[in-house]
Length: 313
Image (cartoon, rainbow, N blue to C red; front, side):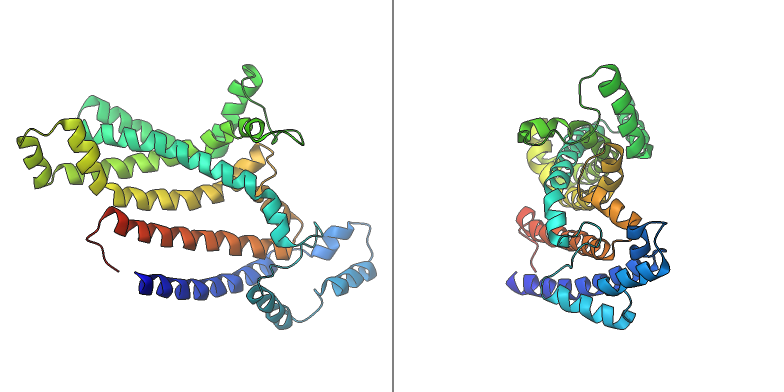
């Protein structure tokens, strides 16, 4: 196991260096000049050139790339051009909201998707199975921004049950801030619950058809105990895989959802960075999100061995 973890961490470093290279290239491919965006339309070419020189943007790309890699290896993500603060600090200031939003959305997706997937598998071929499967296909086809706007219209504007947008006034408690994340969490979690439901149903169907489940039933094992204790445990590995992928997808989807609900999270920071051509923030955000993606995959691989002791690395 230790050898496997060390090997994966070594591969992770290589992946992150490749991601850093791609992030540098992608940031420069985006049309526009950060200096011109910061100074506005009234700036003269001399003003733009002066600011470019101060920001180091007039250096050759090769030198900028070497400086960028050197800073990354030193654990420095750079300094935001537009926000005038370290990129790591800018992301940390907004990380709480995005992490809470993603955690709530994943919890909602699991709470809806896993039980419905189990029920659909047990009721295979019946009207209830077809209705749940059709509902899952409908939920998967709905874009999160449309769900978010619909929830705002009916639950916030018409019924006034939830705040319309924002993340609470300054100094508000965590509980008060969580109220602002309920609707965005459902907007993110509902489409993902459909994917989890489909994988849970498929995986449970495979396990429920195994000989040991039929033998357990023949020996008088209670149906609910057989499903929850034996079938679900053995079907958990594919479900765990799709949940891990869902977390990374939801973090990406948070960019749109945070924009719809005017939430000052990492997603909104990335959108602003792209609009202002803030190269360091774009590069840093891509690196952090990719790092989280790699770590989640490593955690899933390690959980495989916990769920199934037969798995050895």
